[in-house]
Length: 458
Image (tube, rainbow, N blue to C red):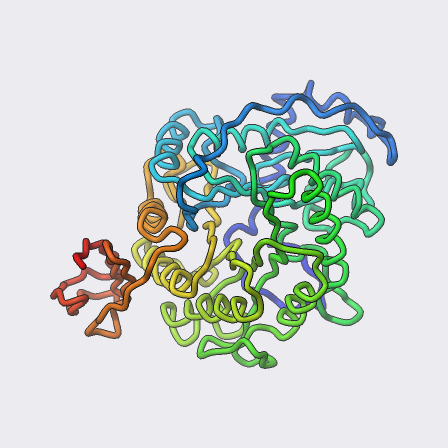
C-alpha cells in the first residue's frame, strides 16, 4: 500500500501497491548479481551534491517505431516483472505476445522494474532502464517514459544510497532543477522516445496544513521538466498532471459528477490550476479507478465505468489537448472476480474511454514473479502464455487506434454493451448468465461475461 499523509482522504487500494517488498527483494537480488556495478555507491562517497561525477555510459542503439503507423492508443505499463530476461521460459512467449500487435508501452525511470538512475549527483546507472527500453524497441512498441521517481539525494536522503521505502517522496524544491536535468539526460539517451509523462499520481505533493494537493509545487516541477525536455528536442511530447481522479458518492460534490459519484473537488482544483499555470503541454494525463472511495462500484461494476467517459469528456471541454488515462482500474480490492468477469468489465471501461475520445490508455500490467495465478495479468508468469487481457488489448489496438471513426449501433438489451467502427464490432455481455440480444441487426446468444468480436459490412 502506498504511503500517504494521515490527513489525505483515503483512496481506493490498487493491486500494484504491493510493490515495496517485491521491489526491495528484487533489488537485493540484482545487487548481489551485479555488485560490481554498485562499487561507486559504497558508503555514499561516490558523489556529493554539486559533484559533476562522470558521464553516463554509452546509450544503447534502439530503433523507434515506424513513423507512418497509426497511434495505437492501447497498451501496457511495465511494472516490477516483465519479459526482459529474468524468466527464460516465459520471456520468449511474452515477447512474441507484445510483438503481435503494436502497443503503447510505458516505463518509469525509477521503480517498477527500474533501478535508481542517478544514485549520486552526476553518476548514472541506466543498465536496467536500458533493458526495458530495449524490450520495448524489440517488440515494436510506441514507447512512453514516465519521469518518476526521484533519487534519494534529491529528496533529502543520502547521496549514493537508495531507500526504496521512500520511493514516493517528491524531490525537494531546491532539487527541481536537478530532476529536470535528469529528465533531459534520459531524453538525450533515448532520442527515439517522443512521449513523456511528468511524475506519477502527485506522489509527495500533498499539503498537510491546508488538506489539499500541493498543485503549486507540482506545477513548478512540471514547468522545469517541460522546459528541459523541449530544450533537448522541441518535438518531444510532454504531459501531466497525472493526478488520481478520486471520487466518492457521499463526499463533497464537484463539477465532474454522475451516477458513479463525484470527483473530489480538490482534484478538480489541482487540474485547473495546472492547466492555467503550465508553461506548455502536448497532452493532459490523469489516472484513477471506477470504484468510489466510500461506496464501491456505483451503481454497479459495469455502471461505474461511465466515470472514465465522463472525465474524458470534461477534460476535452477544459482543454483542446489530447486526453490520456495513464492508469485505470475497475476491480474493488479483494473482490475475487473470475478472469472472465474482470476482462469483461475492463472491456466496458475501454469502450467508455474510446467513445469519449481518449488518446492513450496504457494498462497497468500487474505481472508477478512466478506461479500460474496472476489476476489480470497480460501473460502467465510461468509460461508467458497470453491471458484474456492480452487479447483485449491486442484487438482494441488493432481495431480502435487513434482517429477511428465510431458508428452508432443498435442493441436490444441493456445487459449488452457494444462499440462499432465501420469494419469491426465488439460486444460484451455484462451478466453472469447466458444473454440473448439483437446487436447491429444480428441475433446473438452470449455466454456469461462473453466478449465477442464480429466483422461488419457497411
